[in-house]
Length: 145
Image (tube, rainbow, N blue to C red):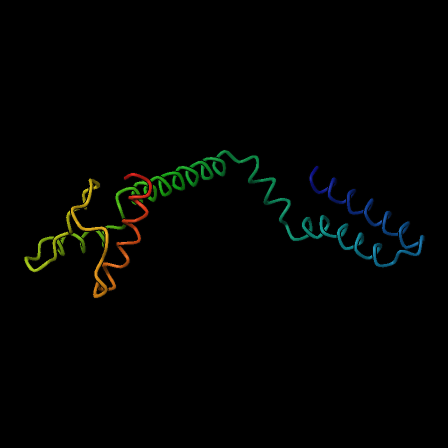
């Protein structure tokens, strides 16, 4: 009941401000103020204010919000754990199946970072793949790696 009274007073004050604004020949602003001032009384008439007041003072509603919050935290936690493990269950199963196949290609060993035994100059008939690595190798040598 108090909420409805407050909303009615706010609407009446807003309409009064709209009248004063229209008196000053600022019609567009006056219409906009009138539109905003009609919103609270419209919410009272549709029952939204009563529903909000009932929800705000209901322990059951607050318990429901708490349950929704816990569900959200659990959902976000599982998403974070899933990202750290490396994908969804479906992706992990596919990776496990690929690892079990005998014809699967094993990962290449990591290249050593020591001095290379290859000569510094490349023959002109070097393949395109070796050219890509020669640039990287030159950069690493430049930095002493």
